[in-house]
Image (cartoon, rainbow, N blue to C red; front, side, top):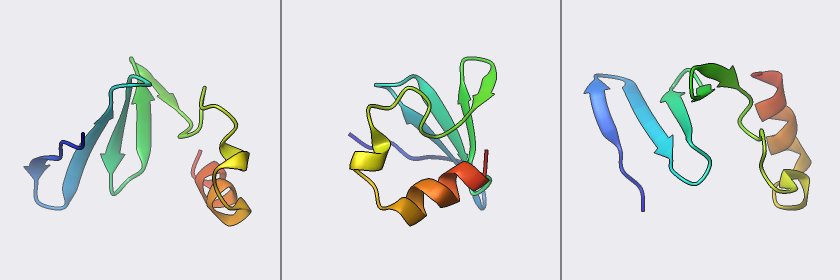
Length: 62
């Protein structure tokens, strides 16, 4: 299920219930609890599921 809550124009908050992460878009600020974390933190083998350029771009934002 995808729930998109618009708080202000241009900003979205996306919650990932399986991992407990929250993503603030378009800034790509990902939080788990009170800590800012990487998008792929604790994900199961993301390199096997995503192309290298996606992994590289996401890591560059950390």
